[in-house]
Image (cartoon, rainbow, N blue to C red):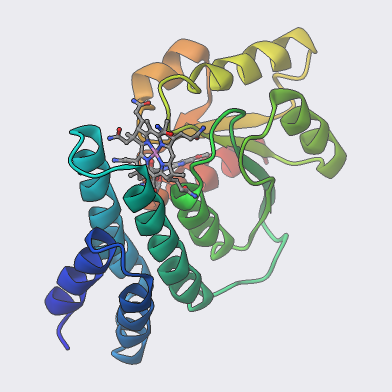
Length: 216
Ligand code: B1M
């Protein structure tokens, strides 16, 4: 099956909220030797964003959105497993979490999977993570970078809270920070004083490597 057909089917599976189809398409993609990241980025992710737009316009409802998210997660697990793990803890360490009040973690999962392929250790605290936990764990694991993902305009201020809290505790210079998530922009990162912003998982990898270079 060609990459074009796989991408169409991947998008369809998410729009149809069909986890079984999503899993089959992910497996087919791997059997065909296709790039898992391309299938995630240009297939499944397009579907989840499209369903998000329909949700935003009131054309689908929360249960469908949740089923689509579940289908996306099941496909993601299969595709991520095919990514090269690489040797852990060679170049640096990063802590990452979705900010408090926010349960969106599909995109963060893709970012984590991509960064792990670069011999960078990633400690993923999951979702709905308070700022104080991010800081405590960053200290405990002595990481180089703290990354936060925010998908809601209402939770975006948590990224600013992290910057403020780090400054208040005199820890701002100890860590590099990176922000991401759909409502996030370079302008926002500049405004709050984050060290880096990444639009997608591929850019996140580039930025993380740059940040680690600046630390060493
Ligand atoms: Co929600 N949701 N959702 N949702 N959801 C959005 C974000 C929304 C835009 C949909 C819409 O209305 N059109 C809207 C937000 C509106 C706003 O704030 N402006 C919204 C809403 C309103 C809500 C609820 C409030 C709905 C409700 O309950 N009434 C609720 C909130 C719950 C909460 O968090 N407290 C809610 C719930 C959910 C589900 C649970 C059903 C599910 C999440 C499941 C999960 O993640 N486990 C869900 C989903 C799936 C979405 C959409 C459809 C898709 C998100 C996604 O996975 N995108 C989303 C619509 C959309 O995004 N267009 C939507 C695909 C993913 C690959 O992209 O996450 O952007 P993304 O990640 C990218 C980049 O952003 C970047 O790289 C990733 C990979 O390329 N990136 C980083 C992300 N993090 C990064 C970190 C980095 C660097 C880069 O460095 C640290």
